[in-house]
Length: 157
Ligand SMILES: CC(C)(COP(=O)(O)OP(=O)(O)OC[C@H]1O[C@@H](n2cnc3c(N)ncnc32)[C@H](O)[C@@H]1OP(=O)(O)O)[C@@H](O)C(=O)NCCC(=O)NCCS
Image (tube, rainbow, N blue to C red):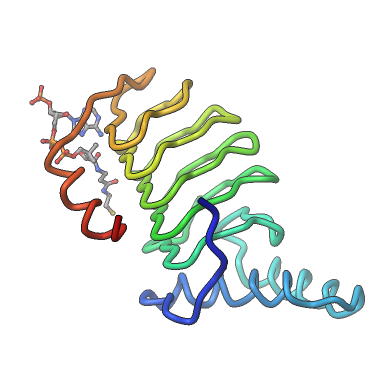
């Protein structure tokens, strides 16, 4: 499920800059350089709290990288998207092609199944099955056939 970074990501400028720091940090062996990257990262990206150790799959998107708070140990598969003001608690796993709408809160650690969509403002308290949409507080889950078709194509499965 977890896919390493590849060279074909980074359509959004903001996503690109943020992810470049994270990838660089994770590729750097020298403790001194890691410290320098970490200091620069914290100075440049004050509007989010995304640990440099977070493992993001290829094609990750943060169209509006503001107010995003991720706990240590969050991991994503390929082609995931996290919108603004999203909070993810615990070492939550986003499988491939998961999108999380604005202001959603994930009270993890949870698994958000492949191709699922978390609605704007949802508070998710349970694992979300693949290809389901989760909306409301606390979130309820529904299969979503239209979005399933979209994801099917996007995910190439
Ligand atoms: C959850 C979401 C992905 C569902 O999209 P969809 O599959 O096209 O669903 P629909 O719009 O057809 O809505 C289906 C039902 O869920 C409800 N619903 C949709 N989104 C909801 C949400 N965030 N919270 C509560 N209910 C929601 C709709 O009112 C509708 O209810 P009904 O059947 O009783 O009329 C989408 O509505 C959403 O919230 N996307 C995030 C968008 C976002 O964050 N935008 C910010 C851009 S900067």
